[in-house]
Length: 165
Image 1 (spheres, rainbow, N blue to C red):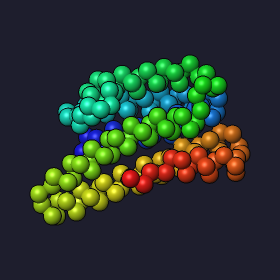
Image 2 (cartoon, rainbow, N blue to C red):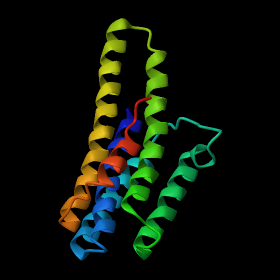
Image 3 (spheres, one colour):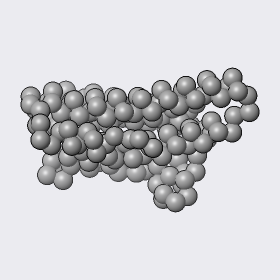
Image 4 (tube, helix red, strand yellow):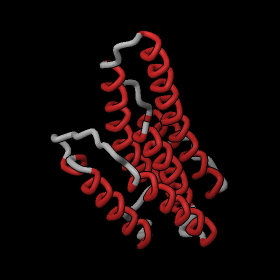
């Protein structure tokens, strides 16, 4: 599914963005982030269908979604670290990914074949697990960039990002 590719690319972009923010603008990470942007752009621009979410303005069309992503990237490029935090980065991408993952789940419900349903449900479960692992990876990149792990705030941050629905 095309939407699975969008999720995959935004997961990579989320992790690289978290690393960039926590590194306080490291030039090498910025180069990698630019490559991640290009890959995400390619996947979004190749979408042939879009699962509308009328209650969320930036999900009305692929163009409104893409505009929101680009506006967020502009904030990251400015890198005002007093306004942008790793948890905020993770939340931005994860909230959107949750919506797209729900689209995948809804599409699976309409599968007619039991064999196809099993395959699609396996794919759905893979996407869910990748999303959880992606959050863990993004938080781990903070440890890498900062060289420490805050035992007081980090577990709480991870629990706050855990998706169970």
